[in-house]
Length: 88
Image (cartoon, rainbow, N blue to C red; front, side):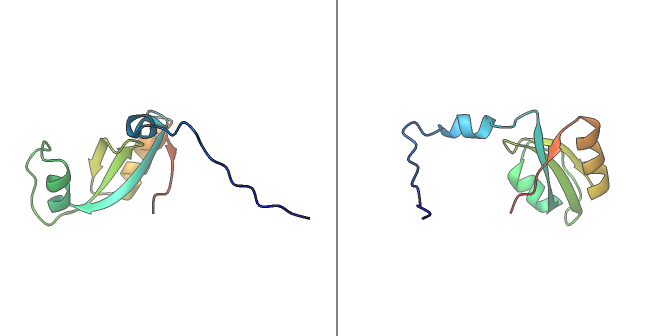
């Protein structure tokens, strides 16, 4: 007979610990417009509005690269031995 098990974690990760998981090892590509880029990362240099871009982001969401090509973002991740993950 199969039993369902309930796991309870007594010491949950802090938000900072959770964000640090995979940093330097894991990255993901996120499509966005230049308008979204400026809203999310206001420190980014000024860029023409309405452009379709692809950002390579670290596991903690920090920007690594911004490009106009998904292939370039993926190639950069491979070049730096980052594992690509899918984020939904």
